[in-house]
Length: 500
Image (cartoon, rainbow, N blue to C red; front, side):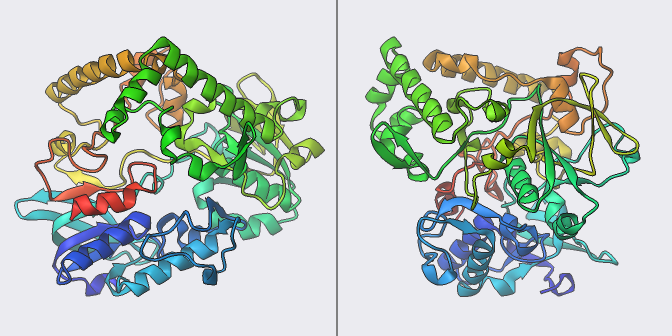
């Protein structure tokens, strides 16, 4: 299908042809086979983050075979995945392609097309779509009764916003676009020394890819940030027990050690109250997380090795939640650090200078042949919802809240804080965000260094405020839902049932 062949109106339009978008479209058609549905995606191929053009050399999932699949379409070994091995990105892409084909979704998918604006009208939504990555750009307006935004939280990368980058005489690449640059970059013999900026899993992937291709790497992790993420093997030992980390996270017993305001709904409220609302229980929870943190650091070899000390996260594993990731590489990435091929440093980048110098805040500098930045992802949707005055009602991140709307949410936020912190007092000691650092990372308007943190923080948009993690807060408007805004696999199927 191309943009010229789209109809003027659809019953349902789904934005995103990845994990969430495909299954919600399939579920709709199962329940109402006559539904006129369109799936729109800006990528060239199906798969969302696992689209073919997003897969860089060596990309693998954190998941092992059998834990990243739809329940009605198993990822069997005929796809090429092997038991007890992390699934290669190419196989996941092929899995999604076959899923779409098997459930007759392919003819309903419009690729290389992005939704630019969505306007609320009386009978649903008026959508403006345009071709992506094609010249000349083609534009079309379509309507729908229900709009499902299934773009998730990893579709719009934070742009690089480092002072002086326009004068930097070497490649400066956003990790989100590295797939398109990777082949030439890795083969270029003039690129010998590369800096990687960031401490998330994507930075780990970039460092491993560069080092395994013989490049010398300076790995820069912000000193003012929260340090690198936790990386663990697929299996960890807790005492004498060898535990599959991925399954461990969804084992009921282990969920008791995580604070959850809805925990009582599982029928074990008395046990959760004992663990989180008494001194003895909180001590047990604290010991558990200390043990898990210590075992993770020990089993990854970070403990007691001076060359690896800058890869030790700043906070216990408790605070990293879904940031915890897996060492899913063919070889041990730490060996590159131990050999000196990769140097890890905790520094804040001040600016880039001509010709190829990275200047740090402490006055030192680093000469490199290229810079790859893992800047993270924008939390706000990359769609302009109109009118802007309804952003608060939709529950989306926005800076357009009225004074009254801000006051209402401030009251609700304070009430929530009182309840949550009274039940889980140790949450008061969580990592603090540096507003000045975040202003740079989120590409917000430049601010003079002497401006108060409160004024800088005022640029930050309101957070997501979705009911059940997907619907507008008052739940009255059933014409729109947002999928993939909660970072767990299990919610994909559960949300589809609610949407329908």
